[in-house]
Image 1 (tube, rainbow, N blue to C red):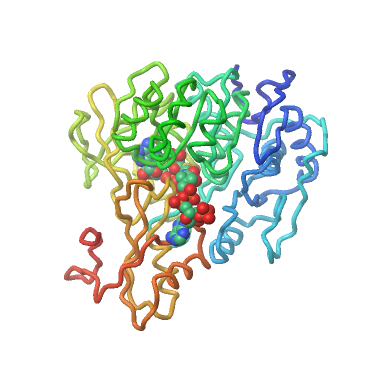
Image 2 (tube, rainbow, N blue to C red):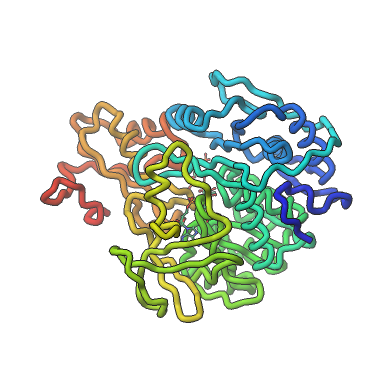
Length: 466
Ligand code: MLC
Ligand code: AMP
């Protein structure tokens, strides 16, 4: 049974699970996680916010769980963050220390996480509205914004997914997603601990390791599923799974269909954002329609609006900006009251920035993003502005426009259009971005041009690129 509290371990207290989490070659029982995480909680009880270098390891699982037990806010940090990103995340979040490993050269102190320490102290459940996580996510311009997620929102989100997918302690969850985003961390680690289903984290999510894992429930971004269907033997090994779930980016219809053919079951698709958690999904026992992300989850309301805020019909054809109201919504962007205000309508709906269609049965199809400046590549959200700023920091770059170009494997791939003031190689520019930002924000390609297409106001016309 699922409890209303967030402490993910409070669900099945008393019943140990010998293989609660297997990650990076380490298998932890539920009591290992509880004992080690409570020992962490004892060390950090006076902290307010701690940064966790979120490698897919047992130490990360224990650090995060320890913070949830102690009521300390976690700031997950992508382990390959570049110096500019790292400085921004640490400065903006006000993290007081690293919990576990610190990156080389960091001035913040580090509090060790000991996998073999144990404590059985019992902590009171922190307040429901306490901030569990500050998740950094890209906007169209500027550095990433810190999304404040409460314990209440996360608990509501996980419980509604468990209901929609009939996810129980009898499942074995398999995924190989990063642990600094909603998908891999909140759904993929906290969800498993809360439901009590053993987790197998595969490391890099290749078709072969998914096939070998023998789970019942699999999570993947569309790039993972595209690669799975390119490897029919691995895909066929997933026939014994109960449910395959795709999310974080649009699943191409041909991949949906091929996956259904090879595995004997159509995947479940779900839609969400760092700011809203997962709001729409097809159901374990409901229709799974290729290209559509299903119905609102428990407590979620959705509507479509046109550019002037007028109603758009839910008739399966009219396209509008998707707005949501949900118990899973974030509590704003840290230190950004301007951006927080802009993300909501005056009557309190969250503006997703996605454009969608809703049919008469309430089924949703995501048509795309309203802005070309948010790119989804391999399921990662990347702001064009952040990559442009990094490129403009190179002395040879006079002007730049970064766009996402359709890509069969990644959904979109990052391409930088550059007007150079002196000769420079594509590799030098890509490497320059890599010194500033995480690996997945590097452009895959640089296209040198004499000028960028601009309108009469001088604004770059990105839709003419690509
Ligand atoms: C990448 N590489 C490059 C490069 N970009 N090399 C040169 N130039 C570039 N521009 C390198 C990589 O470092 C890697 O090297 C190799 O090329 C292959 O890279 P890749 O094609 O990116 O593949 P891979 O590394 O396998 O990554 C694919 C992936 C990954 C699907 C595993 O993109 C991924 O983990 N995505 C998940 C994102 C996610 O979790 N999003 C959820 C957001 S939450 P090497 O040496 O390492 O092989 C959210 C809410 C919701 O959206 O709804 O869930
Ligand atoms: P992120 O902030 O990384 O959480 O990215 C959220 C964005 O991912 C959403 O605004 C959508 O654009 C996109 N997204 C997530 N899930 C889906 C999906 N199933 N189909 C289409 N787009 C999706």
